[in-house]
Length: 185
Image (tube, rainbow, N blue to C red; front, side, top):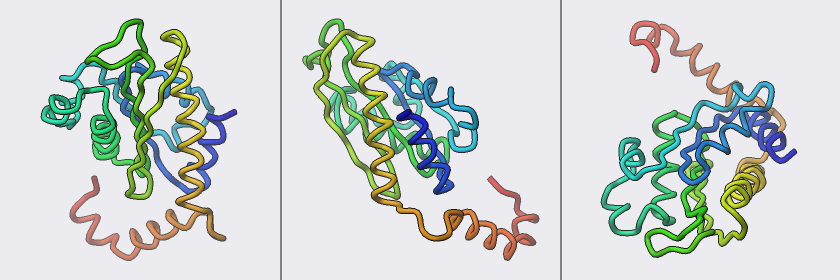
């Protein structure tokens, strides 16, 4: 149910979504894309389990060295990197320690999520309990709920729910001759 509510919040606002996942290992993306029609809003995701994978998508080595991969700073760079790489309106990232043992001197269950919505970053520090699968599932469930709430709070639906798309369509029509010459990304 939570995933469908997030899907509806994105669809009603004509927003696109991307993700960068570490400890969740693709669970958020797999769960979200099980919704029929998810391709209308979901662009893509990267599973960046190792630090070098995070770096290849734009997370700074300096950030990882200074704060660790399990940090708010890393989660924020992951969300921003996902947004930039996939060219989406909204992005989410997950990094943390699902266990069974701690790493970087940080306890099992310490998780950071970051959302990039409406040009603003929001970061969460969670202290979760349970086994590895439970911690990962709790992360995904939290993200579905909180990302939906953040979208609804920062981007209320106006009377014209297709406002963004309508603006873009007008803009494209008005400049179609120059775009046809130059091409589009």
